View: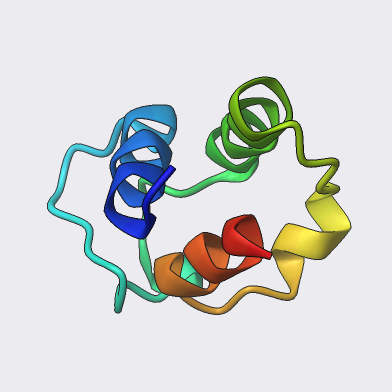
Length: 72
């Protein structure tokens, strides 16, 4: 899966009301709450077979950081 495909899937998992890009700061975005992050964890596990915890995601500052984590 390409970086762009991963980003698009993360956006689908978050299901934001506002526009989000890879530079979006997670803490500043009302659309990214714990439920949205859990949805990202589920996406990563089901689609990419990656075991990423909420603790791993909490180290991410931007949506781009989540994409990079998924690419590892």
